[in-house]
Image 1 (tube, rainbow over the protein chains, first blue to last red):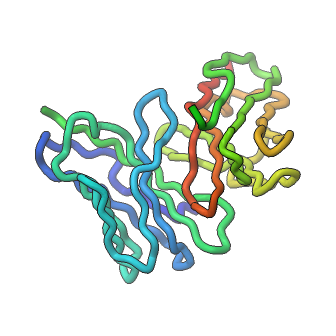
Image 2 (image 1 turned 135 degrees about the vertical axis):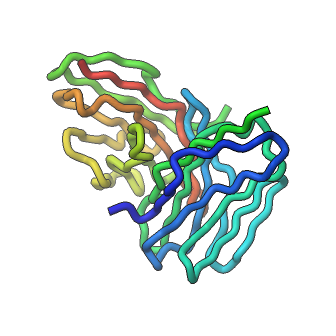
Image 3 (image 1 turned 90 degrees about the vertical axis):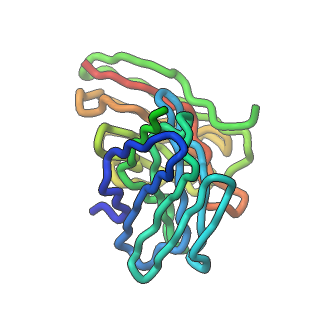
Length: 112
Length: 112
């Protein structure tokens, strides 16, 4: 049963605009969340993370927001650049967890 | 460069053949993982090793075996390959008190 859900398989955004990628989770024991970015023919690379004690974490153009009551997190990319075109995976883990639980990914295309 | 190294990068097998995917990390991480990525399915955990000398099943372990040879190396073996095992396989490691993974670049396996 998928505990981390990314319901949008794809997203297309114009360069310079904001990209918003969404992620929902079902397990209330999750307390740490991460976003990974994956280019074709490469392994996923870590992008940004957030602990459940926070509701926002920012790193340059990337901001992750966490809404614990809704079990929802989102990744904002502002401004979007063509080099951001990739698949983005949301992942989560709890204290008693043994491995990250990944969503199915969202493919972002940033057009010039 | 420090990181996770996977070999081979590509492999074509006939149904029923066996092979071992190799993974090595040089970051002194305790935990290592094997995931497979299939279209529309995201990253699914096959096996993991929380520390040297231990291995456990993940979400999709059927048809695979693993060996944690030492702290650096974690191999994945297909004893009798099936077309359903056609996938991209990623090895990852984690450690240092952080939940995030470092991924290898992947092995693209085709079983015909």
